[in-house]
Image 1 (cartoon, rainbow, N blue to C red):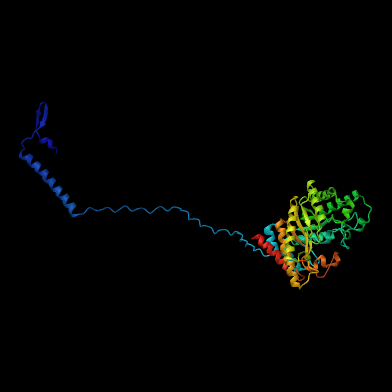
Image 2: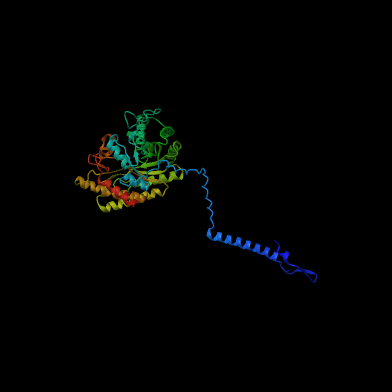
Length: 434
């Protein structure tokens, strides 16, 4: 119902205004009915709201998540077993070889008659890192299998055996000697032949080239020429002490094996003042080495044989003086541009009074002082000329030389027991590695 229908219109300044009009009884009843109905409806609505609480709608349920193919996590595989190396325990130095190798020093031993015994091989490989050939490479020392039975023949039976022996025991090899003019070691065809100097040089060239080529890479060191300054040396007598032919021999050896170490060796040159020392010979050796170096001959080392007697070292004063002389002599050779190798060390005791214990003690004191002098001088290699006393050339008449049963010149006795000389050398090496 439009309430405006009950308002009269009135115009003011041209605008119509709705004005109240007088209600009739009929209009009043109409209005009253409408109002009553409205009040009733309002009251009902209020009562309903009061008496009946509003229903809270059920919450909309959260749907379960849709299943998805979430991948099952891949299990971490067990690590594949690998051969992880077990750390090698640090080797504690104990023997001559252990300490020598820490110093970069060769400590060698000459092979001998007992070399096929198991205990010999055990001690040899335990204590030394180099072995020295016996007489196998001499031209004619071995009667059954001389290396040079004739001018146009070689018999490699003995040299092959020595090289194989060294390889089997994993020891580098120093060979004695390519050219040595000691008469007992030479074949009759050479000594009795009517050869010119040119012929002899051709024989040497063939010999050196053939031997060194055959054992290329199998022999570490060669004493190329030995004792050429000795008055009895066949080659020195026939060819003279001429650095020109000597340089050629070193050149032939080098051409056959460029990696081999080549040594010029001699005796009685080691210790000025010693009973066996030859001053003139040492001067000639120094001059020869100097000439060879000046001519670019491939010479690597000077070899000191060092066959000594305890008679040289009976007092502490003698020992000190001669040890210092040895040290200085090594320094003199090294100043020429070569290394120094002790190739045949032994220290004989024959003629020394006292008990065996006393004599061994003296030998040990001398070895300590002399070995230390060698290391102080910068020695490259120290080789003992045999393992046990009874194998020494000094106690074996079949090898030649001056012999006596009581020389006992080596550092192990006949039963492979270390002597005081052994412990003296070991102590020096220990001190050097500290």
